[in-house]
Length: 95
Image (cartoon, rainbow, N blue to C red; front, side, top):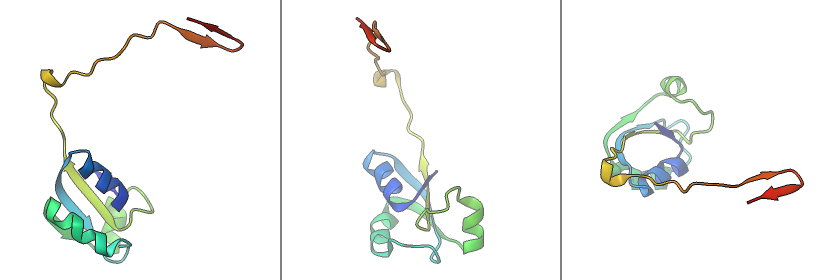
């Protein structure tokens, strides 16, 4: 679940697939940009301000809340971490 135009756009740009878009016209602040988001979601719902207050967790969400499909990772998408063998103490570094 992602709230706000900028955050929703970042999720889309990161490759997440939109599923549901909830729009509250009373709070909408990015009207023209909304047209860019509409085709990216299979389902779109217009809500009242009372309903939106109950489903939103932020106070400033631009009147937009989106549900994205969770990415699935396979063994081919392994994340590798480099081992760190050093630490820093106040006043002295050890490598």
